[in-house]
Image 1 (tube, helix red, strand yellow):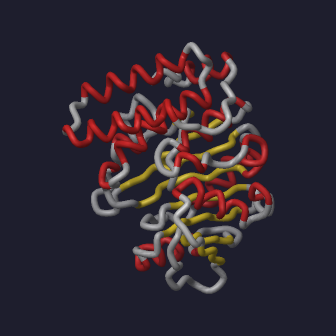
Image 2 (image 1 turned 135 degrees about the vertical axis):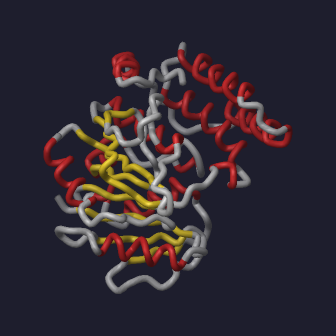
Length: 290
């Protein structure tokens, strides 16, 4: 299989970006062509052979990654699969690309592989980086219902069939939107503990827009993808979970602002998943109500 890689950057982590690109170049097997997208910022110096695209404005994470996809032809058709990697991560093992190739070749219905994210100093994997409800053991690989945005590989035929990431989302939950559409089309998603991306331990709330966009995009995710009876159930469960977690008053205010925005603004095309997909998600351990 021919692999490519898409990396988006704000241009503010040149050393980390170089480390990531060096780790991609060091992968066993055929060379991986890399495209770095400057998302509203100039791209720092990159090694020879790495292609760059500089956007005049920040299109958000899904918008930037979609530009990177199209740099490999329509829906990435010039390659068989694309790696999507955070610009401050790195691949510590040389066999990750070969493991991706083997996984896709062994299972024609495998559409997406999501890697294990580990802190480079401690080796620890945050619970939120294990994309399933039973997340206590990050070393256990399994079939899952979503994937990690900056540490994954996607078969490009999936993108051609179901489309790219939802640019309207800008930040948060765009991976689950794509995952649900892929699962509805019959593809599968694997979490692989043996495919590792080193990434510093961080809190998602470090982003100023986190609480608003998380709430807004939860509502959009449901409105776009769920059968009508499940929309209020899914949104209601997440509302209760948010209140139970007792965020700070400013965070809660931002969350409710995003929640209202999710209902009052356009969310893109609505394509509710089939009920058999709901059952499949349930059998995989994450019914689409949580």
